[in-house]
Image 1 (cartoon, rainbow, N blue to C red):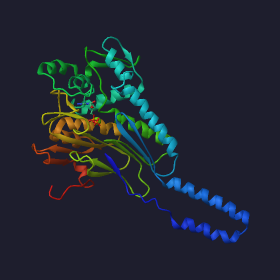
Image 2 (image 1 turned 30 degrees about the vertical axis):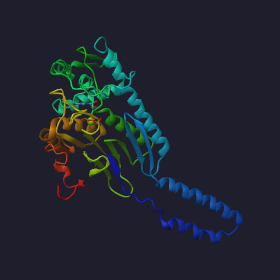
Image 3 (image 1 turned 135 degrees about the horizontal axis):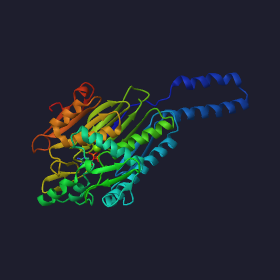
Image 4 (image 1 turned 90 degrees about the horizontal axis):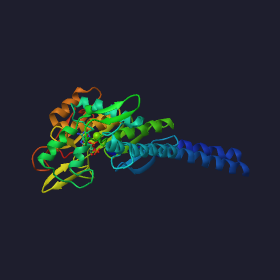
Amino acid sequence: MFLTTKTPWAWRREEVRLFVLFVPLWLTKPFILILAIVSTFSLSCRAAQRSPYVERAEIMGTTFTIKIDGAGNGARATSAALEEIRRIDRLLSTYKEDSEISEVNRRAFDEPVAVGADFRNVLNASRIYSEMGDGAFDPTVYPLMRLWGFTRREGRIPTNDELAKTLPLLDLSQVTLDESTHAIRLAREGMGLDFGGIAKGYAVDRAIGILKRYGVESAIIDAGGNFYALGTPRSRDHWRAGVRHPLKHDEVIARLPIANKGVSTSGNYERFFEIGDKKYCHIMDPRTGRPVERMLSATVIADSAMAADALSTAAFVLGPEKGMELIEALPDIEGMLIVQETNSPEDFQILISSGLQETIELLLPSSL
Ligand code: ADP
Ligand code: MG
């Protein structure tokens, strides 16, 4: 996901002229000095207000870009927002040995493991998105990620026997949360949780909450495929989120106008391994235990970045027909699916939900 905006940050000429007219009336030396200081201060404040404040940080295996439009304490708000994202990463990353989720995956079959509010929020939300997509979104996918070598970043193809043994470990109903002790239990040995399909969206929403607390009214957070647009930029009535071309690394395939919405794209290009000329992507179909095939990307627009994140993963797993059915059935959700048509990489089909067809800007050669 890329952000594209053409905000003019130019000076307004009248404001500068105002000072010029003032000077001849008070042509004494001290006054000129004071006026010069006051005007410089005023101009630099205005410059600070006009320039968007942009900061980037590498967290959760991706680049987070925070861009704040206009007034507000950009640097302090951004650093608090990035700290919040780092805090969530420390809790929910399966790549960190001492995270809450790693603790749950290590111990929660043997004994109850108490978790904090963020973990509970994400688990409870996961149940809702799992139900919406008929189990396509499934945070108990961790044993499969391990089996296919994604957790060690060394792809491998499991045997049918291994797959048959692993599939029964995917079952969200076997993950229980005791509401009074806040403890998690995993009912089967070898089960494990993986919030990789939802945690980035949750982190983006939390970070937007922090920006708001600092008085920010207009900003975007882009977490490489997960995006939230707060308010509108000063010069237009929407932000524009660019959706990455699934086959061309640095190109945008579509632009979506959004305001106060989350957008997420799940793509087969994000993490994958290749054996022979076959590509195995990091999104698993919990029904088969295998990486999803044919789908190039699934983009979902929703009211929160977390909903967009989880539902884009669900739509990716469900595939073109069922995925679009899900998007159309849910109120206030829109989306776009890109599907491989044949074995020729250039041959793909784009499906766009009915509420998006008027506003989406496709950037394709006219022959397509
Ligand atoms: P990205 O991480 O590229 O933004 P997704 O949001 O679709 O993409 O998340 C993919 C990640 O979610 C995987 O790396 C894995 O950790 C986890 N995952 C894989 N398959 C599923 C699934 N069917 N349901 C929920 N999470 C999944
Ligand atoms: Mg996702």
